Image (cartoon, rainbow, N blue to C red; front, side):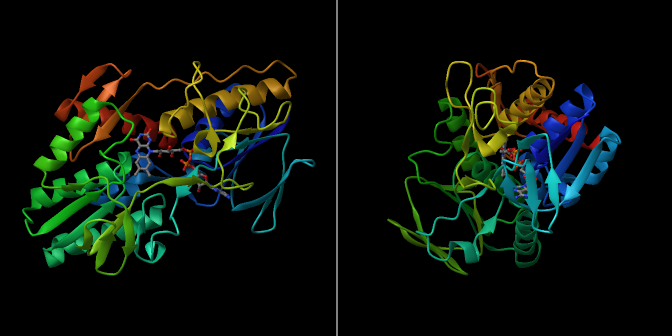
Length: 366
Ligand SMILES: Cc1cc2nc3c(=O)[nH]c(=O)nc-3n(C[C@H](O)[C@H](O)[C@H](O)COP(=O)(O)OP(=O)(O)OC[C@H]3O[C@@H](n4cnc5c(N)ncnc54)[C@H](O)[C@@H]3O)c2cc1C
């Protein structure tokens, strides 16, 4: 029986663990710096919805126990990798020996140095603690002050979902003196997404009273303002930054260019998946760094790790994008299923909620 280590228990790492536990008799060591699996895709719920923040995390201990006694959870931050001796070192001094390793350490928010004071004043959406702080600041504006300005920097999927959820709750509460502004660098919101989704999201955000500013770069952030390159200063009581991500690999801040088998090198027992890797579909098109890519690559890496340990041939990863759903405020979403079938409104919201629920059920097991 061999030992497979999984670095990171996010969307990709949890898929690896489920698949390995089901298909093999190997010992599985799950390593994560946090005691919880963070349901990032449901983050918008935690920020502005009437649900408890605890609903967007699942304790990894509980998840590991559910998978069986061969799965051990180590709560630690991995710091260095000794590839030659197959040992992963952690900040707490542990040396975790493995026969195969799957790097699933995801990405973290990228705070460009070119934006002054960004780190000091931006709330980070990729970290559950950041999400808790955003929620507290948001509720204090909504429920106590009843007025103010919220600026969401970054108009990609996460920025749009957060702005829509906040605006939707502000509207439901009747707090007409709170303004949400969404600022994006590119000419439209949701750059690189389908025209249908851009149109749907723009219309819904506008109906919810969100001010959309596109083609603008943020230059500086302070305690009460956000300065834009062309338009100048915007009043701001709460700034949420969803402007981009950078891989959080222990080897570098670059996403790992893996082989088709998801190995980091030809013949290596080390694999990389999810946001930590650059992944392609069967036609050679780069896949988006999202939850479904992380899950698909996780399942494939598990199969290939089992094959490698059994001296069987490995197979190439053939990920495919099954579509995208954009949450646009409570019980509302627009999407393209299989990149063809358009859905919107309450039906879209029900589909998006079902996707989030199914993932949570796979982890929490209810
Ligand atoms: C607000 C928001 C909305 C999103 N919406 C969608 C959506 O609608 N659809 C979609 O498909 N995707 C969405 N995404 C993207 C999706 O969440 C990510 O693509 C997905 O989480 C990537 O999975 P992963 O396993 O690669 O990384 P993650 O899920 O980020 O997991 C990485 C894990 O590694 C751990 N880790 C990292 N470094 C170390 C270390 N050195 N030592 C120990 N542990 C470590 C982390 O603690 C974490 O648990 C959204 C993301 C955000 C933030």
